[in-house]
Length: 443
Image 1: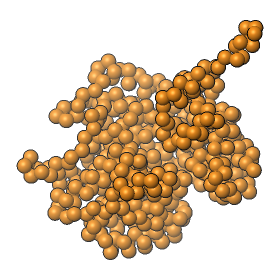
Image 2 (image 1 turned 180 degrees about the horizontal axis):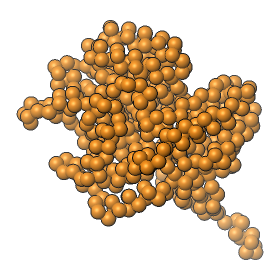
Image 3 (image 1 turned 60 degrees about the vertical axis):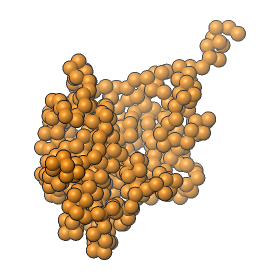
Image 4 (image 1 turned 45 degrees about the vertical axis):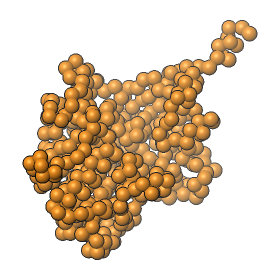
């Protein structure tokens, strides 16, 4: 065998990395047997909207690496702030101690969120933030002398995969196996579409159950405007306004899970900004650090906070902690991310790109494979029709898109775009055209 033939027979760097990966790593949301035929994509580096593998192939990150990346990979401003913080303080416990990044970030979050949200509780990730909010709500009522062990959530919702978060979700794929372990939850219908009438009809169901069981219900948790893992289902802001009015009337908390919708994804800084309401709790994560480091928060009110403020022997303190709570490096990344919003008209530029995407995806509507095209800010979804679940059409689109240099990760039969905000118009064109071609190839 000559030298050239020998090189051809040797596995390339991507293949070697994939083989080493599969020896030891169990991937999330993955049936590992799929990787007998579907390659793992090893990423060596990233810059802007592009991911690069070990062979130099590039992929447009059209889903912001699971909805977290706002201003591109290896963003210079965020990098510099993390490096600066690294040389000062990498971590310290937040129990009995504090540090400047955590203090400054908490003040900024209070200033940009709904007016009644005055306190910040640091957690590590989205699911943990939901867990903390659920516990806060239940414990608040307990401190008021009421036991309210039931939570309300919307059909088709998703709030995470730890036990409490899973309990208030409604994605069967995640929930059915662990059903015996879950906490008390009831579900009310999500509005069927983005119309005000659909919101009005769904509120009738909500009022009925609150009227019947509000003495047992601690809180209603919602993903405002867009249900992420539920297929990017979207609904009208009238539902949020009505839900806030009803929950106040019946002494039930409203938890706004803005883990995915926060930080500009829906067109405003927060989805709740489409209304004048203040929830009792708001959970934030994902884009909070620009996609750099795990960090989440639970925002809440002085009223909730004061219900736990007591002498030690009264046993009303909130019982929840994480080792890496308020990590300084993550807080520094979050501060750098918020500074990018402050220094330029991010939401204004996003509005222009959203409109451009809206015009470019009109061509999907006439395809016989497409049921609906919907959009909310920098989130666009194309819902396909005419296929069986076992056809795994999303996987077909995914593999085709990778071959063309675009990372799409469809949700079943929902093809969606949620790119970093820095994406160029030319890159938007490629992202959309590749998805269009992938759908056309479906039989």
